[in-house]
Image (tube, rainbow, N blue to C red; front, top):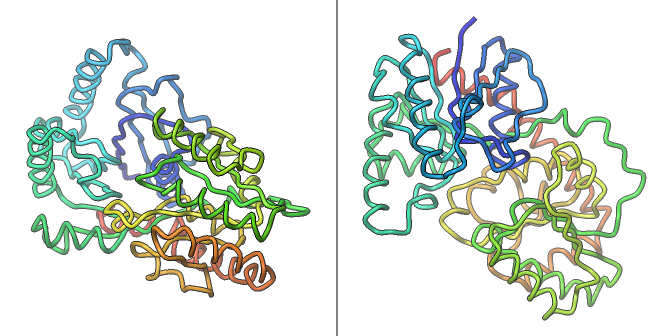
Length: 378
């Protein structure tokens, strides 16, 4: 049985990149490949993966020793990673997953087949300091040019690495956003609640939370029975403060429900029992090149979805057939599309059902896992 090693920074339950990683690992394991997911350092609560998957093993390099001092933790974790990498056998396949860039470790074992999955434009994670940022970008580009291949989540991002980094076309591939459909099986919803739901890390730059709140205020003038449910934590204390201030300014305190972070087991039912699901991503570089994993979860519920038209969505999902698009950065248009759904709900439900059919074909975890194995020649 062949192996693939996935190198990740840390395990944080129920975030998009972890859900994608686990779904891909599950698919590869079911296809007969041994998957070893290596976590370099712990999160703040030292969480570990609770679920088990066929042919998937989890390795926590930090388990033996992880100091509390962040600088020492960074140094120790890199040493453990280096020690792990140098012991891997010749021609083993390694997938560097997420935003980490441990390029230095692979200098000590050049016989490995190394691939890097990148799901967002590089500028999203480049340091704000100009000098540090330039150094990060330089080494990241060198790393990408040296390794065996780049895996992205959208065709636009693939084209960026081909045209801007000069990587050969055959060394870049797109593995679509994926969703594990089994999480949504046997979900029974007797009656949908009068709530509009968003899930994810509550942020302004990534998901345009202020546009959503302003749009919801407009919706209430037509549909006062509705509430807005926000599922997830805040990207920062400042964002949290801004959101609560805006809710107060709009006088919608009694209409907005903020759940905080929830488990992956709770998520499917909360999404499925909602009236409709929303995502108000602004027209940013992050949105133009990325593809939110939460959209896959939305689609699996068969609920109507209102989403801003930014990025590569239209390559997969047709407006008013599989999903309802709205103009980015336009709260009034977002509100108008939500009102359209609520006023034409039987039609919107059929659109939601069509969206699930697209997800089952285009965002199937096992199909995408096979594409990854083909690209890496496993």
